[in-house]
Length: 164
Image (cartoon, helix red, strand yellow):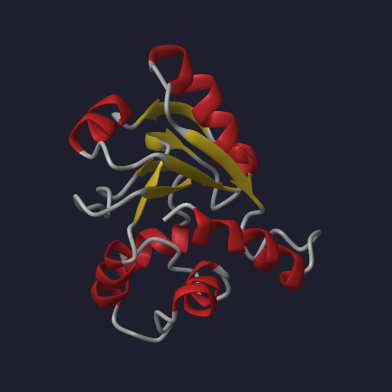
């Protein structure tokens, strides 16, 4: 299946960027970052920043930007079987040089899972000067990531509050 990512949710106020790999089938259907109802991203954001996970999507994005957090995916386009990160291939990365040039306050990058981190290291870092940026890999909030208990994942996601 051919997948194309959403535009970044970012403002001049953002100091941190959360990167996923590519949208899941459910996210694409809903037109939302982390649109699968069992994905823990929005519940974690609620616990960390008080942004209600049940609020309308655009309001959640605006509140996140208000907290200084941008959201995007590493892949601009890719091929993917269903929603499995392991099947992502033929990846064209998003324009990170442009993003960081346009939003120079972003200094912290948080990867939502190992696939986002791996793709960024492979496709973006060789072409990009990352001086001055701080990178943190967080455990995936995907419902497929059952190997790490929710409480442990949330504890590690608390580092996001330090990046803003």
